[in-house]
Length: 468
Image (cartoon, rainbow, N blue to C red; front, side, top):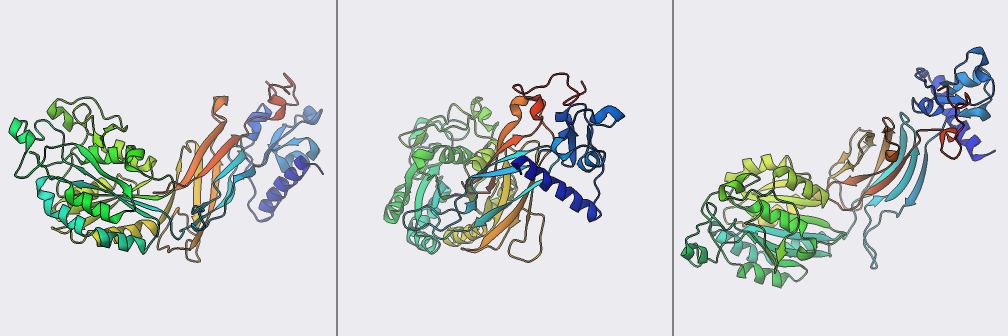
């Protein structure tokens, strides 16, 4: 039997089984062309048999009706979904020089017609020794001096705690104050030189230390980082976060790692529109602008907007921990609602609990996996999983995972309809776990027309293919 015959029999068996179980299909099949017909549902087919329609029988009908009314199954056009795994590396821990793999498969192609749900399995495993890049973005205005000193002294403890989780761990550090103009900082020449006692000139963002596994260097760089000062209460932290994320090569983010950015401050933040107060009206472009580890566009571009920052964080798969003082909790809790995969923790007045905050929030982040889609416009994607229990749930979120535990998702995708533009009948979209760079890339080939409508096989004006 040909492959086409085998696929047809599979489709027919599914239809018969659903009828037998009392789930008889509603006949929604209609269309004056074969292509229109197959787009109306997975139970629909088109009969290409000569003279089938001589008794006013419709060539577009439920497959069971077509066969019952005398259409030989060899002439029934009813495409079924097909899947091809292009890249399917099994989930694994990092070992013997190989990278950890937490999501499988990684790439597949699917042929699918509209209104035809298709199911496949997706596996996630929290791997042991998964690389972690931990970068601090710290407010170094004068009020944060004690916090900076405490962070430097806790470098060893931070490293020790993180190495309990993974042996492949790196630390980095950057700092911010604010834009170097009124009303954010004083522009009196002497204040620009030293805005406070024993203070350095203000700046927007400075990458103090590229990500490294040298803990001693981290401690030295943090201790040596100069304190500065500004005038108004909010700080320029959004400029710093944007540059820390956008400047991958400057900061040293690795392609395969769980990327964590710890933002610490005792103040609120400036955001898009606030730049007008200083005569800065050009919108932030979200790109990297660094020279000799310093942000160069602080006086030329406005602060990023919240949505701009949220999109950049989601795109680069960064997990953000806002470690802020109690007085700022409410505003950062509200901000966190817009930032995918972020956490907010309360910083002690002297930042003494920073190690605990990092460990607790890392465990919250890493023990929860949330599946999302990117670029799946017009495609319905549903996740069903038992997570670690016995009951199936319609959810893409599984919590309380530990290293080595597997989660299997039943993923169902359904194409709502074929786009009017034929150039869009081949699309790509992704399924990804929030905060991780790994993803499943799906190449979707939409079955929107029959062979007899293809340019090289078209049967023009033939009732075997269309009535138009």
